[in-house]
Length: 169
Image (cartoon, rainbow, N blue to C red; front, top):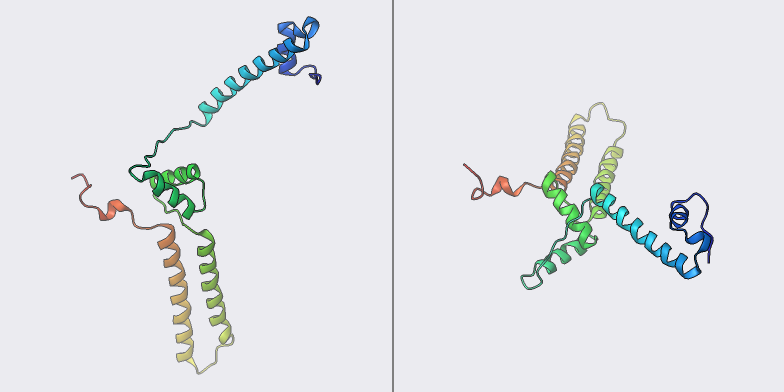
């Protein structure tokens, strides 16, 4: 059996029970199990105060479990993590992007296109004001498209903005 380091809470508990001085190996093991049970009880109480948890029951008959499970897989999250993210997103009114990597690749492509347009004519010619205006128009449209895509995928319109039946008047 492994020795209990002096001064630890376990050692103090075993010392208070009196099993260290005159207890058998079985009594010491039983006291350790009892200490572990008490310790875990207090730990879980403290955790519930800091991080309250909730139990959610999803019906398979109504298809609730399947739809949540499918959405969680689509977002590459565990069901509990998806439920937490979805609840927070709904509460804080933001959108959960299904594929963050795809969004990042799209933004990267747009930035790359913008860089290519900017590299076409780095030194603006003196008498080519029409071409310069076209380049600037392309640059502006790419930047605007990038902002619109980011906004559309990150902050979709809220359901309450489009649902007049649920509005309280």
